[in-house]
View 1 (cartoon, helix red, strand yellow):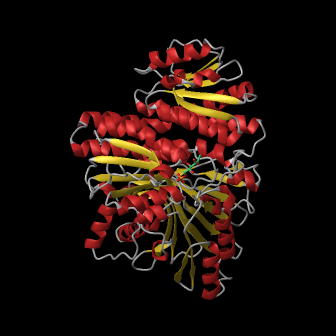
View 2: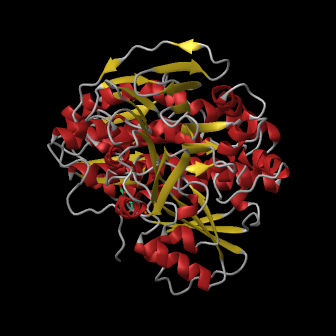
View 3: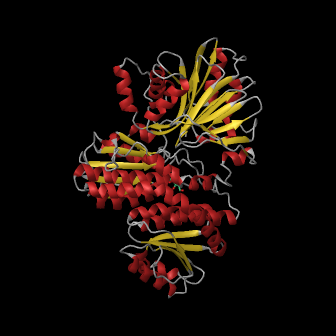
Length: 609
Ligand code: F6R
């Protein structure tokens, strides 16, 4: 996720901004840049890669000791490759304005075309460069920069946190937010804006949490917050932050994993941004427009990403009528009888985009002449570069070794792919699409509202079951992959042996293990398979097995612990189930004193076979 910092104060601003960017490094980035005004000119210094590269360039550019106002950016690529020309800040054509941006301007192509017709030229592939030029264009007709900034933002749809500098006001910064984080730091004789509090925490603990649809104009000694819609002033309480630096990087959560679990509503919103038609009845995946609807789709992945694929198969088959085969990458790559050709599409799913087995599978698929498609989180990763087309999950960096929000983002993208191919193949009606898209749009608020009680329930159950040495996770249909994921999370975090099974498979062997020391976590939702899984649960109970059942209101089920979550019809209920499984594993591991963010023997990116 991009990191932004803006500073107006009395200190040398460039080192303040570089250090601020360093404290935002945990968000992940592929390039960085800094902007400030000196001698009536805007100065922009940018570099690909780590901050050290930027510092080297800054040193060469000469000291900027007199500058007391500057802004900086670390970029996590979303539009355009991670190269210096796409790094921020971006300047307007006339060299008067510079901007840094986190987020996605959904309608930037339309705006770009309009500006291009007026003679604007674009040196980068970014939506950000379009925005800064739109502000410059609006300035021609608006009374001042503030009005021009607000007018441009009202035209830009999507998500943004931006900081804007004007060559003619070298000590002033402008900033605005919409659906992307931006926090204002109130100092003494200095003010800050940043994507996250750690950026300025050494200087001030006093913050204003800006809201969506707000603009701020600030210099060293004053600031004013206004509504973007009509520039009416807004008064916010100044809050005092008590967290230390480490806690601040984790957003006040105990662990990155917990933070990432709680980020999932935002991850869903971000994945939907720019991917839906204005009428909310179609999915836009321009990355796939040039590819045919697959005749046969092979999904290949490892671990949690494999579970996403297994879940996505249900939607791709049911909604888009695309026949799907799915395989673990380490098996796929060594299969002697791979039958692939130009009619096959191989979809590889990988958060990191670097997993050795998945990358090898992709290469083998390409050698066989199949079309290849990557679903990755890390922009510019090996898989993203080598696949013939790539879709990004836009979940932001996942720091906890155990994958959580990446799985949610992968499932969301698979859902969008199912709707998209369903609409292209003519098998999913406009009504069907509208209904599913409405369900998707409702998800972030539903999940946000549920997360605190889910967390509480997970905490309570973890205390009860933490001493178990074994666990079964059972599910059927689209809940079977979730059972696999629940078991994976529990074992990797808490080191409790856990097995995920298709519930109907229990009686073919595994049930021999069940006794009163071997509990079962069953996912038994309000769907057509409920009577079936209830029978499987009864079979477990008949062997004295204790059962936690994750179910919906009104479902008639008598087990040791009934955990009810709101019903969402169909497979999208997974978006509420998954966080429950994650939180249960998280709480169990934390209660047992395990290293939650870095479990033993595991690496975030498995780049060896
Ligand atoms: C589990 C986990 C792993 C990864 C797997 C694939 O929590 O994180 O199972 O899902 O190593 O990694 P990616 O998705 O990066 O290919």
